[in-house]
Image 1: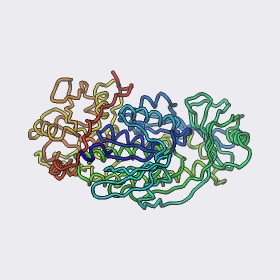
Image 2: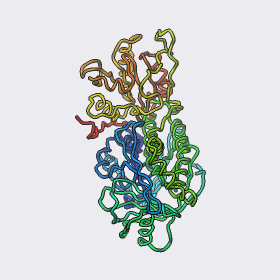
Image 3: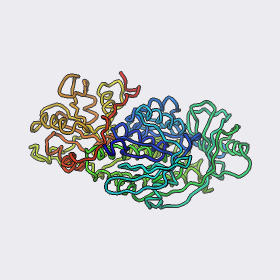
Image 4: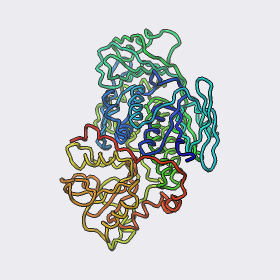
Length: 574
């Protein structure tokens, strides 16, 4: 049959962002082709920090165990100035529940290796040495022009094109998307062996009086990522060691670097992230300072956000309007990211001499006032971790309705929100559901690895026939919606999610008969006190199901396998 073997999506760029996009498309049954102009995997690492929200994303993908085995868990940030220790800020996630209360320090090369292995398990290979040279799109698809390293070329037809091809993105340029913003500073990165008496249990920031440096410990003993915010053209490692020693107040010896890079970073982003059937993600959509390690993390979350939406539309389970929510949700986050990284850049390099002179006095106060220190720790972590990203204003989020005064259970009352539990637009795991000893928590985290949406319904008396609504949803939408009954045992109700001690129901604010609708990326789309057909229809309305169901009979061919389940990470296995 014509077109049967063509890829449903072509992803350009096999870095962490492109690998994530390809993995999640393939896991959801979309035939994908992944190309990269490079001759093979990158031998060096720009990114080294994987923050908690990205680790949660990798957990949903089923790859987090492999990554954790290769990295070092960092839980502190220690500041020095002029040889004097100012303060040690400990990781404090008390107000941001997560299963990963740390930043994982791991080379980007290792992150990519884990993702390539996962992609191979799904049967997707990478076509190295294949460069995108152009494309044209129309109502039915995209014609992609590719050139190989040997000079041969081809034009491939696909339904979707995803550009994850970095800061010099060909896809972005051909779309005519402008990177708006400003140029910034020239910094140096190096991976090198370091000899000192500093314990490798924290990231170090050291100010010399004129500028700042950073040291980040790898899992490999004695090896560090070094960052110099004012690199000098001469002096090499001896000069770098001299500056570190000056800032830290102790002897530091730097060995021959395995890799160095002097680069001028920028603070720029696009104002929209797709045009028709073509999308951009990661550095193709925004470039910024490495000060807080946000680039790769943001790109991975963008790729995940896009992939589940693209797959749902491609497989006929949502209307094209769903794809508009990619830009609508992610552009504001990118805009906020530019602001936060601009602030982080200023704080990291701290060129202002008056500010640097005031550091000892400022941090004397911070050390002496525990409440202030905790507030700073949580503020810094909140911005870096990604755990406070929310989609409360998204078209996919059904806002809570005021409690109906008569309690009659009509459509408005059915969308009311219980007193506890994550609100629509926030992470489901913003609740305290991270205890691996709890059967309900384990079951929830296993459920989050299902690539579908999830409807959680707490068994109990409700208004109307909630069981009939639940069963009807499972029958009609089962291809993309997992319907689970949160129960006290493993046998109560259809598709039970066992919560014998009721800890899960308590954490999620699920009273008897109440429900939660969760997106494939783990964000709450809607919730209510009573599961009714009207309430569920209202929550699912943004997907445009009526239009799609009518059009399914004429959808173009391209048979795809069922979504692939992923393993449960070690910390949640019984």
